[in-house]
Image 1 (tube, rainbow, N blue to C red):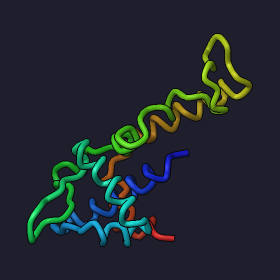
Image 2: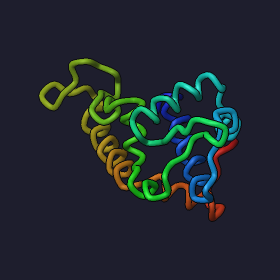
Image 3: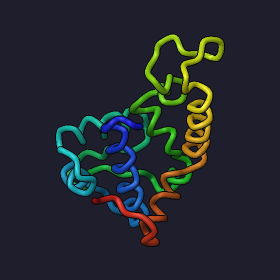
Image 4: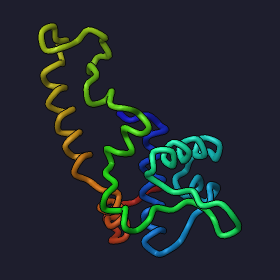
Length: 144
């Protein structure tokens, strides 16, 4: 459903949210290891997240990546998805057809539209803080 980059972006953001709540920063290598992602690919994903002001990159000897604690409840999963994958998932055809629309629908158009709308609503209503809290409580996990 999401690109691999987007999956890693969501995982990295959740991981950083957990650490940021404890006042900790994390290096690129530590993030890549925590989310089970190649370091070079993780660097590109983190660059996108930083450019879109979802995470902060702090330079210097005590630097690393973080998310300001006051931002955690303001960053929604949809922010990460659109920063990395754009909005195609919310308006694209379920069969990948270019000309699929309300007037000329593909066979899946109306069923897929409902799923897309539900997905968008869930992503708009779920914050990074919500997901980090589930990890903290042991209700979810990030590694396989």
